Image (cartoon, rainbow, N blue to C red; front, side, top):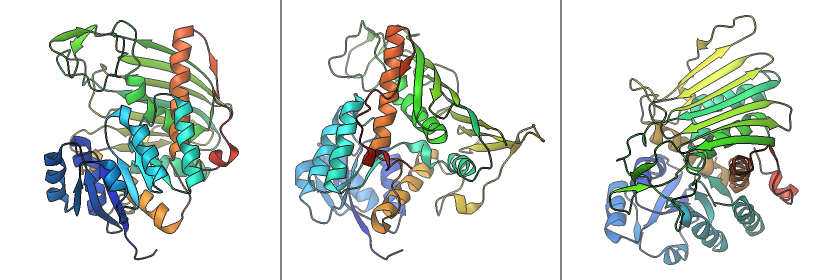
Length: 382
């Protein structure tokens, strides 16, 4: 491990940057917070002062010309992820983007190919891949502890939008409020789709059911209650190329604590359940069972499984993003294998698109939707 530090420029100075992204870079001694950019200068200056960031920009193109910025973090509203990421790639910068990278998987695959051609590293902000419990399950899959994987279930059940007066965020520009608008399957489901694929491999077929449960609610940017057919909940069945089966459920209105993620993996030699729910001051729990001892027992992970300076009492956004940041910085500086790349983001969005299509057409949909994804890109998958 070299003593080099990676110069980072962050685009976006809103709440998620403040609670997750910026603390991650600030805490890691191999990262150097060179610049922050926001269209509102006061926001950017406040974050620069709080986290010791060297320079403030209001135009991302100007920041991309800064030679000290080697990697760009796109932490902005959804519709801006793709154009900002492409600008960073074309400027020769490594780039981390919040999810989703694009509304259509074809655009995400295009961005992954551009990054490959430019020779830059990419990472999608799939926060929950960097949960210590999730990473332990992934290690058990790789080393054979769980055996052949039979079933993988991903659940994300939250109730933030059960109250119709809680403002709905990031409705796509120009959306038809009278047509079902995919929402929880994009905002929350993309995480689950990625986690489940990480455990069981590529999808072969999906079928999904989507529904609006709260017909009127406050929408950010609009006055009063709006009648809007936003998708509040999705349930999907999955068949994998490996032969394994899966189930996904994501919800805006199922009572439970945020983030409310649960991953269940059942194999021939054992089963594991990671529950990423911040309860009683603890960010997550991990349980394990075997065919000979079928009762699930809690697993205590060693301190080394957590990012330095954190415990399971650290708020989950900071805990997971510290892990994500240190992995990406190390990948860039040390040339270690890429993980959770734009290609993985494209594969997640491809499955989202397929689930939406299956709901609309009321049938199973086969994957891949985009078989032209190149072999070179496929090899970047962890």
